[in-house]
Length: 284
Image (spheres, one colour):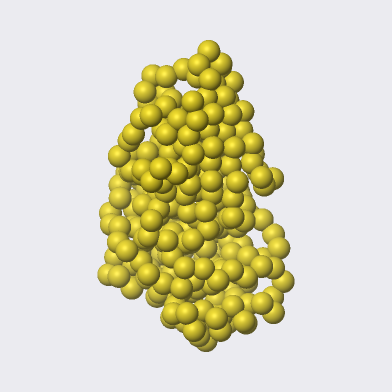
């Protein structure tokens, strides 16, 4: 039994660590997952093309099989365009792609949000998330831009989001689960206001406000965002970093990318993704 699926990465509008309410939008970097299952086998072995632990994708296969009372072992392999531990939601993309590939392999379906929540629970179990990251997972699964309440695993809103995007990825990695949560909670009043901006559709100001708040809380240099704001209305830290994202039109994003290329690291020019996760046959 074999299944294949893919899911996009995402960037942050509101990081949910401070208040458990978050917002994110999908970007056109994808993770591909292939699952091969064998009845009578018990062990699930994971493999990736980047240096990350495979516990998450193995757990996603197991929890998806559990939903249908199925017992099988086998292999799951992911390949990705998303830089790992960069704040671009590589774990959420891997989880979503793996859950859908497993469903494809066993010829079962779940509603998109249900499938997303299987991955969210697997991420909590694997210890790769602080809040459950429903905001990141839902953006990756559904495409567009989403707002969520991670305390209740509730999707508050999802809409189409058409923007050009620049991403600056410094030469470092930062695991979300190692973030200073208590210090992040100190900026909760600012993050709550930013979340209200997002609820009103002002995603540019929301991501900018959120980004400066978390840079201050986590001791990160906000200069990339300051430089970007010379050209675009919205720029900020993605997740807990180290990446920064900026949104705008094609011309303004080219200018941001030109400035960021003077920095050490990688600069990506992307577009938002409204397709979300899907199997290779096109099923969500």
